[in-house]
Amino acid sequence: MLLPLAFSFHAIFHGVRVFLDHLADVNWSYLGIVAFLQVVKIGCAARAWQNSIVASYPSKRSSFPMVFGAVCASTAVGSIVPAHGGDAVRVVIVKRRVPGSTYTTIASTLLVRAPVDSLIAFSFFLFLLWQGVLPGHALLPHRPAFDFSWFFGHPKETIIIVGMIALVLTALALWAWVTIREFKQRVRQGVNGLFDWRYYLRRIVPWQAADWVLRVVIVFFALLAFHMPATLHNSLLAQGTSSLSALLPISPSGIGTEQALLVTVLHGVAPGTLIVAYSVGTKLITSLVNIVLGFGAILFFFHTFHFRRYVTEEQDRSTVGVKKAKQHHS
Figure (cartoon, rainbow, N blue to C red):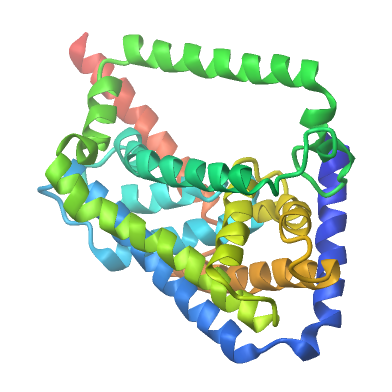
């Protein structure tokens, strides 16, 4: 699996070089709009999550600036660390700022977005499938920048790995559900936003919908910035590839996968080098926005970039609390 990862990073550096070659042709006004809309999109995602937290802790204060900062920090770390590495950061920040909250409940609030996000992402996949633009499974293992290439090239090993991971996660979930008395209650509290359908449809879904609409709009202006045909159809195709690349982001932000998919999906729309420049350029701009906002938020909340020690401190406190609770019950 290290080989496709190395190829993905090679694709990133190659893409940066191609982007720099097209730098003089970029319309920076449109890229400025992309940067602004990226901030608005993060705000919509933060509002949806804030309302999920409010549903779980209605009597506690969870301000929008705090949640917005947590989401910014999460996206910043996620732009650098693959495999959704930023989620732990946002959970720690909110846990520290909402008195009496627990990691289990705060982490569970992230699941409230899952139904709508999964439905929309699957709809994009069906759209790409319907358009007949996805590369065949026989072609994918031979695309070096494709993060899934190893899995398609080794189907038996993939089945074993996925099966083992699913078995371990299921066993851990069942053990926690049965053994940890408060686990079930805390998870149930975290997904309260899903059980109140009126609240869910009024306070969470609209912000999620705005988040997804802005993703397509950002793609539209990014296409304009690189002088590519900016149509709704092409914007949906490009956003669909972005959604697919986020499923398994082995490379940071799944950029290796996105490059490989975009060149295939947008074949005929623009030259391959221009498509790569668009992909990398857009990622660089949005990632720069994420990093500036996110690490600014981390510095504000933790007064340092070494936030891992706060995670350790919180874990130690939680361990002490569990021990005291056990001694009290005994």
